Image (tube, rainbow, N blue to C red; front, side, top):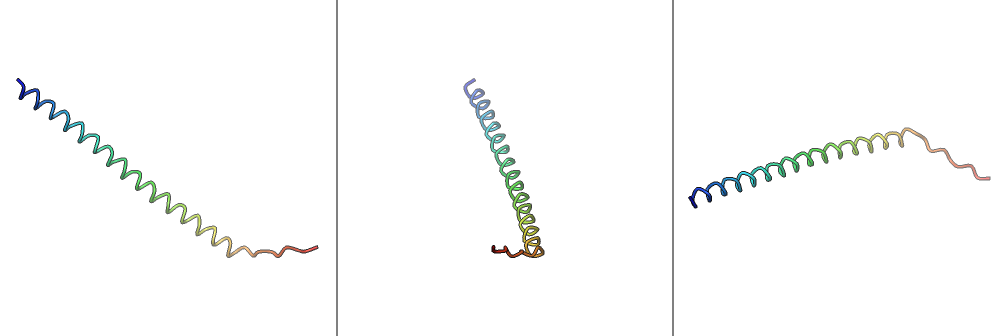
Length: 64
């Protein structure tokens, strides 16, 4: 009976540990993709702003 209980507890512990680690790995991968996509968005925004800066002439400030 002790062996059966030990086997059941081992199975449950290993199952829950595997489940938790799988969830953590999945969340880590999703977060990594989110950061990569976010970084590309920021990079594209920065490139667009750079184009605008180059295309828009800076008018001199008139001194009075």
